[in-house]
Image (cartoon, rainbow, N blue to C red; front, top):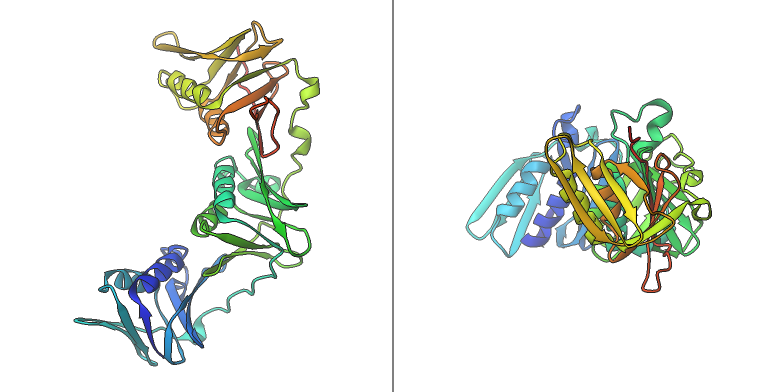
Length: 374
């Protein structure tokens, strides 16, 4: 193999591909990145039996070929090379990277021992990468930790993405919180869904955040794929179906009352109240009157309270308690005003953003379970 390639392109591609490789793989060969040439491009691939990455970039291919080298070393060396063209030459024994005044040589691994990468399913449509990343990264925070998601709860450790007409729904829950984002989507194939471990999907979507992202649902396969023009990532999906959470969204028509307030102001009040709590899981309380909500935290010693202007209906004297970290995480995506629907202090609250006309939007909704007040 003999190619000439821009240093910045190689460094970025190696960094992105290497980032998903395991630090201490059970099989040392899985720490490698596979370099393959095809016409006028170079593809860098990595695989750990759960996630595969393929970064494709333009290159002057003088001789086609392939090489398997340490992903960590290649990423570090490519980043350290001087800016400009880099010559990459490989044979059966070593790979050499050369730029004016700089040369690095790496031993190559035996490609015959490297596992076959999974084939990506056909894409079912495209979505804005930045919108997808924002929704998935936020939803991942509300997923259940892997150590808790065992047996019938395994589906809670993933983020669920499903096509719904011209929108994608992105959902997650840890049974104490539920989040659901709805983002525009351009379908080009059959509707479908995927359920991928939350941390893996969040990392993938952050890598693909620029430009349009093609999404391939699992279908009859056990892998899903997301790709842009330069990077393709396949992920093994969670075998357990995503839990049916639709019935856990409270019905606004059955609510006792509602409150509207600026989400940012309420978020800051929740954070301030939590400063005097003894423990992270200690609850803060929200107490409502006709034109404001008071957010309180603390205990018999340190105490704190903040008053936030709010429009309320049928909530005078209503008080409910929530874990501040949970409530804060659900308020964070809302830019502007929000509306919360309450039933009783011991039943979940439904949270929506609202537009300038105080009408609930369908872009996001969340549920937070309360903490029982003694």
